[in-house]
Image (cartoon, rainbow over all chains, first blue to last red; front, side, top):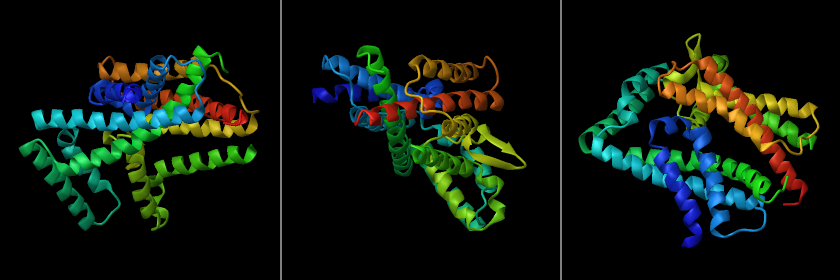
Length: 168
Length: 148
């Protein structure tokens, strides 16, 4: 279990960052790559590593850091939504409806999509929870965080090898 | 090596064309399918906040302005990369410096020091995208040269 600590700690930081407004705006392009670098750093420190990282190690650690931050971020998000009965989807619902009308799809599809979002928003407002919302957020988080986690892992290998092992 | 460089250009060209699909979707019906595909794909990498999309002539990009800048910057580098010798190593500091304008922009707009500007978001995105891809490519090529 101990060997997963670097990934889980970095994922925890990423999860918290994903619910803080300022960091939230950066999460898609900067936060996840940065926490992947952090996970590699924690890994290096916890194992008293004395050899440079290999690229595939960076990719693996970056990937799993992204996954863990997606799960932990979702847990925080669900908890906050449960308490407040509101979230970004509820707040942005009116604009989302306007945006739906601009989509180049037929009226029936627009109506169905609008009804589905409306149901999710009502569930959140009434119960503070929507399984559809959680599932959508989980799929989205897993996909995006794993992509940016891998990018962060590649960048992290280069940065840490350069700084601590003097490998160009 | 040149094949890989062209493949990177092609991927980023398709990616950027997908971002601007609403601007030419009227040209053919089958593009509607690609619109749905790209919209779904981009939802994994960008928040797609309606207020932050690049919009003109009543059409919008599928990615937010900042992400559009990042991927456009990456595309620009991929073209430059064809005409230049492979950079074996670029300084890590350069990557940090390229991210600073974007971080400042997000911080300043979040704290309300100035209002969100699409021009600034796009420009700072381009800088990070350009340098970021250069850093990423040079790292991957360095490792592949070492046989990893």
